[in-house]
Image 1 (cartoon, rainbow, N blue to C red):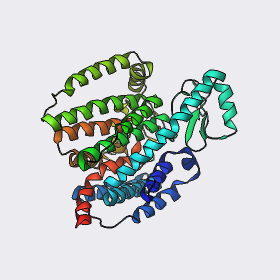
Image 2 (cartoon, rainbow, N blue to C red):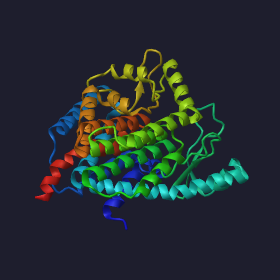
Image 3 (tube, rainbow, N blue to C red):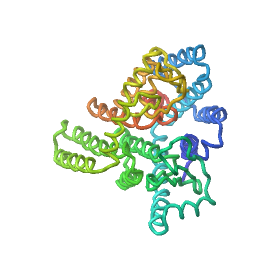
Image 4 (spheres, rainbow, N blue to C red):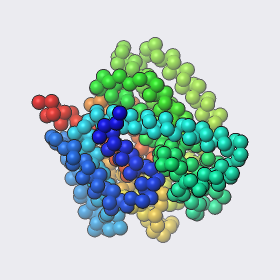
Amino acid sequence: MFSFLDIIVFLLITFYSNPLSLEFIPNEILFPILFLISLRFITVVKIDKYIALFFIVILFSIIFHFLNFRISFLRDIGILLTMLTSFLLISSKGYKFLISFVKIVYFLILISIPFWLSFNFFILLFGLDVVTEFLRDFSFEYSGNKSDLNLKQNDRFNFLVFFNYTNNPSLYFRNHGYMWEPGQFAAYISYSLIFMDILKSKFSIKIPKYYYYVHYLGLLSSFSTAGYIIMFFHVVISNLSRSIKNVGSFFSNNFFFIILFTSGSIIFAINTDFIATKILTQYTNDITSYNFYAGRLNIAFMIQQIIQNPLFGSGTFLISTTDIFATQTFSSINGYLVFARSWGIIAFILMNLITYYSMLYCFNEHRVALLYFILFILIAMSQNLFLSFLAYILMFFYNYSYTSKELNN
């Protein structure tokens, strides 16, 4: 049922997202192990010139960080190993890796739904405190209430490896799934949706419709604002791309459905607190609170951080050096802009260029490639998955076009 590659993909997901792994496996051990595992799959390796240039720029950035931000050096090396691991895996396994990823995410969603439904059902019967206190003896606590004075309870627990939950009264109903928090659960599902579309479009692999329905159910259960927005865009983009493929235009029989779906989604978002209200609140807080919290929409703050070291960045260990605050670490959510802050504008431009080439390789049409590239940016802005393997799998995918030719000869 599960191949060796499936197991490797499951381990990758586990190492980068499951709280038990994040708690007990140090990065100093994790990154080299994953890189060594990726070497196992090498058969033929050819590298595109832009990807080669990207790695050269990353090496120069690491040298610059070593000279100026030495605290970031070891973490930079770890992320470089993650990039190389992703590059080697996707260059050698290509679409087979995507199949394994989709399969694993699909089963992780299926496993999470009964846990999530049961957890919320028992809370309706007995209350949040009773249920979480009962489960506490069978769970591992991986995140407690630290410095947020607005939250009386914010403990997070792992139950039987495959399900995570919180006793936060305002967040308990969200499905964390296998990941340490619901937003990341939604981001992994979002990438899996793109991978399914790639498998259908580029490799003519038939994906059952119920796979999509289960993925959408996973996004709905996460109650992730970004997840809902990405799901809306995915439905629209997949229908638009189908229209372009069939009739060469956005305007087809699907266009009425797209208009109707968009209108309904906008009405739903406006009347839902965790979408429209949350976006407005976060936008207001981010633009008025010029502080060390790099929120998704605090673009002005992130630009200020980027221009401090525009060529090679300031490293992946995020430290604020504004005039207002003393040097200190800050939270990072907008992974898209954090990439530019970490590695510099040169690497940022190459990252975008390479990712767009991958989209063009997968969908063979500039308009469709651009739509999916926008979807990639939305996911990148929702979570900083450039610290994980996942963003690089999509980014380096078009290099498979070189190795696949050699493998087929």
